[in-house]
Every structure is written in C-alpha cells, then in structure tokens.
Length: 127
Image (tube, rainbow, N blue to C red):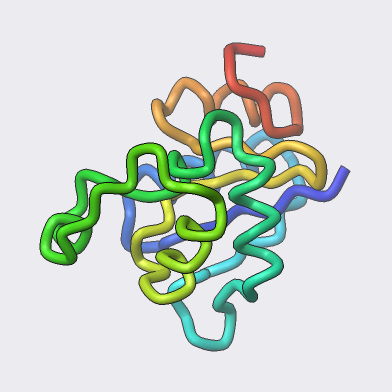
C-alpha cells in the first residue's frame, strides 16, 4: 500500500506523524505541499477533499490566523468552494494528512498517527 503524507516540516504535529510512520518501518512519500514545486494540483486537492474522513471542509485549518484574516466561514461549504480555497491558499490545508490511496485521514489528534503507524494505512481510530 502506497502511503503519501501531506507534510509541513515546520509543524511539530506533522514531523511527529512522519517520524511515527518511518519508525514503524513504512515507506512514505512525503509531499511538502507548501513548496511551489510540490503544490497539489486541482485534481489532487479535489481527491483529498472527497476522500477525507469527515466533511470536505475538515481539510481546512479553520483556527489559523490566515483563515480569520480572510474572513472565511467554511462551515457547510460545498466541495468546489473548499477546493477553490485550498488552491488559492495552500497553507490552509490541514496537516498532517495521510493518503493511503483509498482513505485520507487528518493526523489530529496525535493518537491517529500511532494508529497509522501500527496499521500501515490511513485509519481514524486506534489500531
């Protein structure tokens, strides 16, 4: 199973997720999605938002200062609007996010990361 981690190396929670996965011996493709060279395409953002456990809007960091500064109120937004926001403001993508090719799970709280490492796939609860 191919594992891809949407990763921000400046985020301690994201670093913890990568460490948990690699310490468990999993091969992980790391996407530093904030780098221009590794930005997610529209189809990739759409795929993540469609497959994320929960509502597509859960892929947005809503407690971020940028979110507030933009005056966003994303609760209940349709998928197309969530995708448009993430394409324009990639820093608002939740992190870390694990994509196992089928499921997409946000790595908050950190207990989810332990479950990922134990299961070798994107799971919501404890493994």
